[in-house]
Length: 524
Length: 101
Image 1 (tube, rainbow over the protein chains, first blue to last red):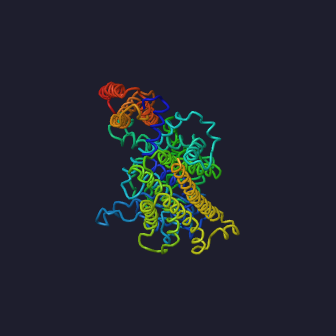
Image 2 (image 1 turned 90 degrees about the horizontal axis):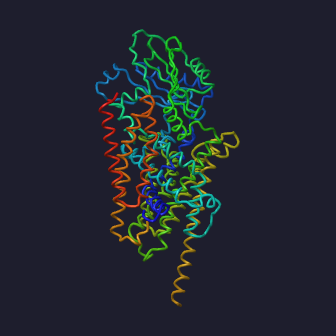
């Protein structure tokens, strides 16, 4: 802090990075996986089949709602897309329905149906959606607290990035410098290369990530202008006035012509969500919202049709510069607009981010290990960081492999099945932490990394045994999702196996060096 | 910040003191600046609120870095307290005179 700008920033970088590094690593890993959340979801529901005609699939979903919740106030449908074969349904029960239940208990007002309107009941799973939610909601804790934690960690990350940039004298030269097998120097190089490689991505993703939680983390821009936040949100999302039921029954018009009209207005973009207000009544409204896949910042483009006649009643979407900026920032973060090429680039940048945070954490211990006064008995803080590094870096990926395995191995129909898949993730992660504490540090690294490699390697094998779709059948029938998923698992297994080998090798080198040093000391 | 010249206890005190400035005090100052921007940016009210909120995530890290760079901890304290009192008063006055929606 006192010895000049660069030193003070290097100090800040080290400590801001360390304090939030573990949480940031988990956010990078799950956030990166979330770029393929729909694909992971499809892999985890191998029995579900898509309907190539999306309007027909949406109509089928409406058919399910008509049979299940005819008296609901509002139906909400996330129709199938190119990436998801299922439709997610929610509904708000009508007042009569709530009164009939006697209590204020909400009951189950959501369902998932396949492309033909049949509810998906086997292999209950949260799929890739869980990894997406964990990225900012964490788990086993109130969502609000989790988002504050995530927000604080993101701000530390932003400060670590900015102070990391100004710490860095030779940012360009270091991009071409990667020295292998040189202990601390290699960790520094790995940290630098991964950091510089995708630097614009990290800055973008961290800033836009903060923006996704903006009004929770920094509510004072709103509070300064509005006595009640509700007024602000009404100005941002002008919700249609609640429409009274006319009390006259009228069938809902077919959805396909409305979706076609929307696509024509939106240059061919798909429909991201369908909301039906007062279904079955003459006053019914059908609100179509543009799919986020079609433009970076497309929140809020909506068309409102009469549900009884199909006439276009209203449209919205014109917003001001700041709102559009915010929409583009959130769009950039979530990457829903990205096609396959860009999606993989997002994914690889995210992997680089996880490696950057991970190597930074390891660097913290590597730097201090050389200067320990008594290497056999390092101080508590050093041991804590070293063990948490193992649990964070090897444990979470192993847990995710465990999550995929649980999806295939748990009974197809069981109570709380989706919740138990998630518990399995945390059981594996927790077991790694216990292992990391119980074993000598070097052994713990080797064994945890090897365990992660084995778990990832087991995924394609267990999948091939339990489900008829896999790498080979996929290659033969053009089922590319299963080909890509198995290949990704094999790549991860090889990567962690390689890391485990490296850790074993590093041990051999360092103990040889120590022996040589001891001999030199003895002869001196 | 290697602690060669500074004794360990003093070093810890300085770190705690600056962390206090860089996190809670910084948050208070950023909140005040965000509020002032939201009220006085030449935009529609809802737009100004959003623009100010977006900018706040750039203001906070810059102030945090400035606090750890400051030559003396005392000066950092004086600057931060001065800014919070002055700008806070300006915001309070603005809300008092202009009212809120």
